[in-house]
Image 1 (cartoon, rainbow, N blue to C red):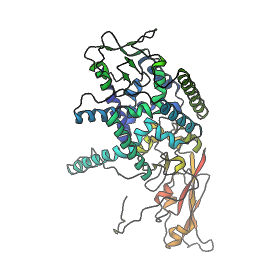
Image 2 (cartoon, helix red, strand yellow; image 1 turned 180 degrees about the vertical axis):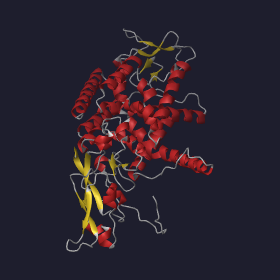
Image 3 (tube, rainbow, N blue to C red; image 1 turned 90 degrees about the horizontal axis):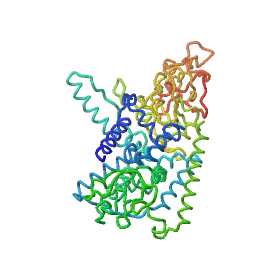
Image 4 (cartoon, rainbow, N blue to C red; image 1 turned 90 degrees about the vertical axis):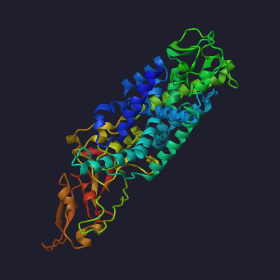
Length: 504
């Protein structure tokens, strides 16, 4: 059973990681469902079928989600395994009492952040978002460098099986947070196995509560057990109390390590019994320092928090560096927009912020370099659109195809061409015909909706240079004009976002 669990876990980890590494979007055709069955995205998307399936999976098998499906959980297992190999210690863990006050306290903070729309805090605590952040900011650059190296050698061999992809820092604050997340979770897993899952992770707390009632569970046979404690020293969840012959099922992630470790086969994975025995949960009185009243109070708090999560979710468901003359081209700078721009399919900024988990899967798959994590504190790490490196091509719908949380709804190419996410604004003082006395018209030539027309800058003279005039009703905010404008460092035309998207 352990080998089957490990095989499935590694398979899930590799496939989900590939979703974040694959810049072509090909992997999403076959593996996109793996992102949609993650717990928090399915809750925010109100994917009732997946939610019910994960709850039933937990009620039958225990926290199988944490040990097989959750990429951050499996990542911790990999780090813990590497730590054990390096230290050459077969038994590295020990039993520790549950820190229920911390687990339920963090869950309460998590729920409050969901209610008040503090997506940045939600993204920091959610396991899928944390792993996506690490994969996008730390793993993907390494993957792209490897791809570019293959493209370099393939090109010289006359093959074009690989093509070069640009590697760039999309957001410094998000990169630093991803690095810090990697270090903290890595250190916790290296030293204590599943410490993060059983003390911090809100998803682990919710599923841990359900797993206490699971039908199948590891059970200690007191007649065979000699109290050697090998199972506890192998348990990465620190949930086996060998002296009391008790397993804390709220923290057990069903890794099956204890089954393989016990030399007397005193632990088996089987149906729980109706009547409590010494092999199952000990009476409440054996927990030192915790009264039955305190435990009941914690249960009531958890049920209230879970109800708030469900109610909240239901309410929210609604470069080239030089030119031809080898002169250095100055990089474009992001204009000061009064409103951020979110992708077509988001419906509105409010809907986007309510559903987005900041997993950055859409950022990974965007082929035009338009999406990047925000550096603003109000929506830190949530993707937004900016046009310094490319523009949002009307025929591209990749971000809508991969979003697992419903923050970007599925949209067809025809629908996207008619969705107005913003409108273009002309900045007279930056326009090349007026600043340099040269003809341009780049914005009008490349506008896909023909919302820009070039007119004479001097109505008294027909030979005067032409400047752009924008038809805001036809503009969809794709950013082609802003991206292709030759003015530096700020474009002479830029896009202002709309709070509510509309069809033009």
